[in-house]
Structures are given as structure tokens and as C-alpha cells.
Image (spheres, rainbow over the protein chains, first blue to last red):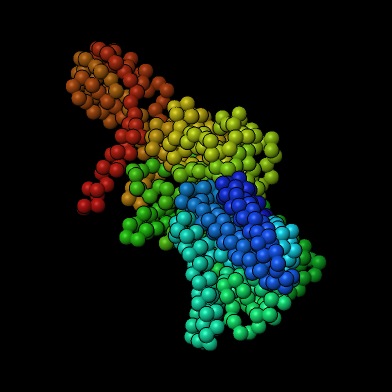
Length: 282
Length: 334
């Protein structure tokens, strides 16, 4: 019964995503981003026609990361703004009254929504990300070393963010939860940048800002892992250890421990959201 | 089971189990709704304060009371949508803490809204799947037809009027073959025809022995369909009982001339007599015989009384409700 509820709600969430305007705006933004990046990459090739293959790779992989960041931002915005309304909005409007009076557990409904959003976010990242990689290959003939890992980490980043959105939406209004989730996402990214500046200048306490924020909200850490998978290893060797990490350059791949922590973090936040939702009076 | 369980012991066990089974089967089914000592406080505001009542199987019970009396809070507590601070609920014999107790329960919320991106048919299918009961698509279609939405089955709910959404809500409440239906203001958005439809629907539920808990401000409706009424005020049960118990027996109102002492004695012999001018009102006994009224009139005529009018009278539920609610502050002051 619980499995059936989870799957039913997951399917319902996917149908909601497909039928609401969110999907259309998401597709619109992605197409614009892909088109712009295709144009940009082709200019890159045309303007700097004299680039050596090594230089082309450096340029290609750096710009790829920049565009992928845009993509992850779209995915984050899209799912965070889907996650809020799907729970808090239904509670506010009264849609959830008839549903939750059925012989089902609230936690099953929450997990179903989470599963639906996770599927939606992952499929979006896979399709849009792969299209982007193909655009790069067609324009500057660059193919990242670990595209599957990179896309999986991007999907994980999206999942982490909307799980937080779900937790927030059990406590605050739908729009506010979307805004706060995206705000926190941006804040950790900036904290990550601050941290890498600290690393570059050998300032441990500043570097710790990035480390701590990456533990509190793993979106930035996962993003860095994804970047690492999209970069050309030759580029990293070339740059060496002189320069620290930049917002669009990641020196080291993720450790297994960090990936495990990210998984645990998502499970913890989902558990908290489930408890909060269970206790809520409708 | 005992430690020694030879063939005879096993047979004995089986027989006693049979007996237990038969005794249990002979017991009357548990009430559709049983709640005891429900309490709920929202911050400083006490919404529900020690509410207890039952709804029997197949019984139609009206929940009445002024705005803010706690009716919707009580309903939400029954359905597990609001956690009570104290009190127990069981639905159809199962403790309400277990979601399965709601398997055979249909609910139309006061604030009814259904996924606007789904069609009416899809909304019903969703609720059937969540209820865990197998209901054929044919039966689901019939359910939509019952509430008058047959020709809008394939349309998205987002385009529905309020009234149509409420009709859809009724279909959702009825689709999974419920034994208990909880309707919170089921006619708030309906036109007079829709209200009449709901009344017919309630009567057909009553015929099918489906228990109904009905919260409605339309007292006339409640009076027409309900077996019993629970009146809530300030979060407490102000009164409850069958309509007969609440409204008392029937009365007979007569306009008479030429009433002498003998005639008055004859009138008083039939029931408690009150008089204002030439209008005489008699409270008839709970179950007056068929001959009571004709005999009385014949005797009065024989006694030379001129009879201008004879009409049955009864306190309406509305009058009774207002009387109960207006009397309560005085009680509290004392």
C-alpha cells in the first residue's frame, strides 16, 4: 500500500510538472541557453581560429563549465519552484485535504512527491546536459572525461536543493520556500568561492568558510564534483597547483565520503520534512 | 495455545475459536464514528473542548452550530487531518491513528479544490487508486453521472465553476464505495437545483445504509434528511439527540370559539394546553393514536364549540437551535 501510494503520488507529480507552465518555461530557458552557448562556442572557434588544440580544450572546458553552471541554475530554480507549490501550495489551497483523508500515510505522499521531483529533475539534467555536451562537441570538438558522472552529480545537486525546498515548504509559504532555497543555493556557491580564495592565499580560516558551507548544504560541493568531471585533465595538469580553485574550475574529484555525506544529507532533510509534514494541522 | 497440544487439545482450541468468531460476528458492528473527549487548542483559542459523539452504521447525523463552533475542526480531527490535543477517535471500528481506518470513508472538505491540471475522470481515478479499492472505470463514470458531471468528465478541473468543483468533490467522496461519508458544507456553492440533488443523494445514501456526517448551515436540509443532530457551540456539544428528542412531539393548534369549562377540560385531557386568545395549542403525546385528533374535534363540536381552524404545529429545528444557542450564555453565567 505504501509503495503504491509513493508511486501514485510520484506519477501525479510528474504529470503536474508536465502539465503546468513550469515545464514550458524550463524548456524555453534551456533552449535559449543551448542556442546562446552554441553561438558562443562557434564564435570561440571562429575568433580564435589560431588556437592550438590544447588551448582550444582549455577554452572549451572552461566555457563548458560556465554554461553548465547556468544549466544547473535553471534546474535548481525549476525544481525548487516546483517543490514549494507542490506541497505548501496544495496545503494552502485545500487540494491536500481530500487526498490526505484517504487511507494513506503523509510520509508516503511526501516521499512520492520527492521521487517524482527527483525523476523530473534528473531527466531534465540528463537531456539538457547531454544536449549541451553535444553542442560543445559539434562546435569545438571537446568531449569531457566523465560525462555520466558529471551529469549524475548535477542531478544530485538539483535533488539536494529541491529536498531542502520540500522541507522549507512544510513550514513556510510556497513562494517563500522557493526563494529561500534558491537564496541558500546562491549563498553556498558564494561561500564556496570565498573558500577557494582562502585556499589560494593559504588563509585557513577563510578556506574553512567554503568547507563548512559545503557540509551544511552540499549543492556547491556536488557542483564542484560535476565541474571536475567535465574538465579536461590535461588542463588541470597544465595549471598545476599554483593557482587555487576558481568558481568554474575544480582541482580534485569528489571523495566517496563526501558523496555518501550528500546522500545522507538528502535522507536527513527528507526525514525532517516528513516529520514536519506529519505534525502539521491542515 | 497450551503447552500440551495433542489432537484433542487442538480440536478444543479450534472449537473455542469458532465460538469466539461466532460471538464476534453476532456483535453489532462498531459505530461508523466514535469519538471521545476531543480537545484542540490553536494558540490561545480553544477550538474543540471535550467533544464526544457517535454516528451509528447507516445513520445520518447532522452537525450544527454557529460559525466558529468547531464543526470543521471536529471533522478534520476525525479524518486525521488535524491532531487533537486529547481524545480518541475510531472510524468504522478501527482506531483513527491507523490510516486504514479511512479505507471506507469518503470526504468532501469545506474548502474543496482538486488538481486543476487533471480532468474530472483523472481526479476520480487518482482517489480510487489512493483508496486501495478496486472500482471499475464504468462505476467511476456512473459516479460522475450521479453528481451531474457526465458530460464534463474529460475536461480539466481548472475550467470548472465552483459549483461544478463541489459536485466533483461529492463524486470523490462517493467513488470508493464508502460506508461512511463526511460532508462539510456540501451545498455551499450549489444553486437550488444542486441543493435538491444533494438532498436526493443523501436520501439514497440513507437507503443504502451508508452512514453520513453532515455539516450544513441549511437547517431545513438537515431536518429533512438527518436521523440525529449534534449541536456544537464554542467547541462543546450543546445538545444532541434524535429530531424527536430535540424538537419534542407534535403540537396541534386550533382556533376555537365558545369554549366553556367542560370543553377546556376535554382539551386539557388530550395534552398540555396553552391558550392565547381564541388560539389553543395542545402538545400531543409522542405517539398519538390515529383517532386522537378526530375524536377530539368530534367531542368539541358536540360540546357546542365552533371550530375555525385545526392545524398541526411543530417547533422547527431552526427555532430549537436558536433557543439552545441563546440559552447557553445564561447557563455559563450561572
